[in-house]
Image 1 (cartoon, rainbow, N blue to C red):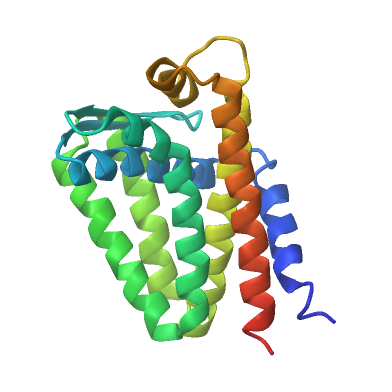
Image 2 (image 1 turned 45 degrees about the horizontal axis):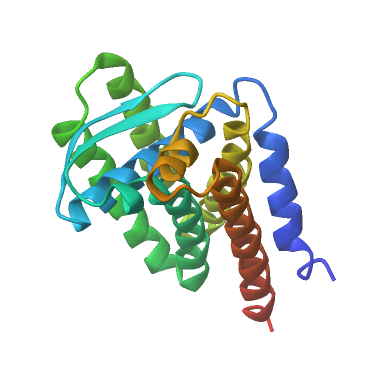
Length: 215
């Protein structure tokens, strides 16, 4: 019975952590980083390039791109963060070696972001904190504990990406939802509901995968 509800207990813990002052800050930075890097990687895949990535202490961020598909770039900020959260949890669930290899890839991605796209000291500090967190997980946890930590990290990213689109419903018509509304003439609220629904579906699928992998 405990195994059956382990996923939902971890997901609840992720939501609680995200409400805690100070403790939640690096995890909000992490979701913001994956949001912005998803914009950037989508720009690269669709023929554009990344000019710079900026992260801010309040968990906001900005990825400046040139070229590529404006529609997909705008869509994949919140969408990409959801995918990253799923990727964390799913890969960590496969095998200890997979979790270790994925952590090394994250180190390379973060270090590469610093070299290629970080242009200001504040963003540099935030990305260095994230890099230190990943390195600490690799160095100070056993491979077994690394799997659990990566799963929890994935759920923290997923939980934050589930809530983040709701902040767009502030009547200011700014951000990815407003950009998509300008491109498609589909109201911003529809895009917010799409991201929120995608986050809920991803959470449900992970819960099913987590449960069936134990039986």
